[in-house]
Image (tube, rainbow, N blue to C red; front, side, top):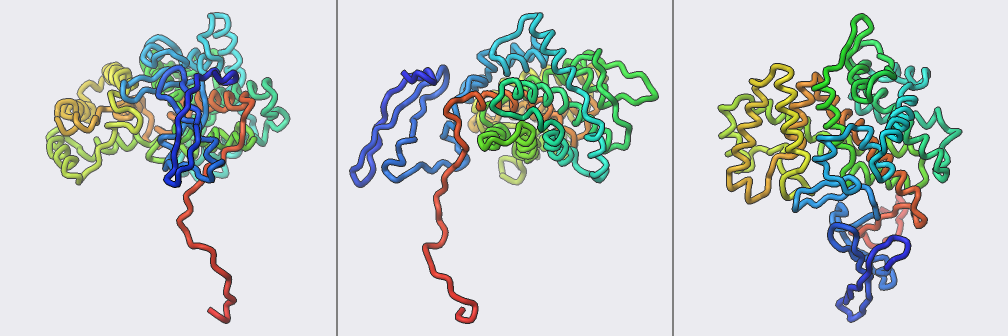
Length: 433
């Protein structure tokens, strides 16, 4: 038993083709497959080749567990469906950070701490004037969130638990404010200051859609829908953006720089842009009458199917059913039950769930298939979809970063490579070439 990690150990024996052998410890976590500790491979002068690290555990973590084959997602052991249906977002934030659900008193204190950090420095607001009005909001997010480190340099000792906690509260409080400001700047409306009497999600919707000349009252159905989106996207184990945050953090970089690196990774269309791609696909199909032809084009590999299947989930994405129900609730509330895209999506969903082509390939609808429709119904433009994802994922990034900072065996990340370039060769001066 490993005293530090609390993991059971067995041994796997690796034999090379030249007869050399080495024993490698096997480790078992609480849930999930066993792993083989390959640190000792360097003694043989070899290392592993694993493109995209799909078969490599880069760290130990107590935060999130995914079983893609069974379609399970747990935050600290709690099924995502239960948290999304019964909890509120800041309650889930506390859980991800602290490891347990809070008492009523602790939750109230936590909400107060986050609320006290929703304002941003007045000089930070001036950063926005340096961006073009048509700049993508994610470009603004990368720059402005990273710039937070210029304002809090006196409290960025990553080895100080109090400084880390303060950074976590600041990021949870300020990222939604910065996101709403990016939207307001893009459309030319004045910034709306945060309101401390509103809940976290109510406040975000207020900063997004209120204007100084009118009263804005958040719709509770829409608030709940966005709360679920935040909860469903709060963490997802060692995905591309979270791994980026951890890798940046391993160098000792400040937390704001680490979060900016996560936002940059999330911006990629293969990661955070999936719901926008799914919505664009539905708009390209255009009409329910075209669904059958589109499906045939997918089978013939003429078109790409977006919003179905998942690199991790080989069963139904557990977040998708929650998002599907939320989709119905929002469209009904907004009087959009007959929304063309939604009807088109339901037709595509039924075909995919009954057609052997999709069933054999386990191409089930994922959370992105529905979330784009919900965000569109909430009045959020497509160029803000990934920003919404970033607001929800901020808690996962800070929780993962903070967990890494507490590890006694923390080392700077340094992946290896399989070099396939030129062998050694000598330089020849220009006059002899």
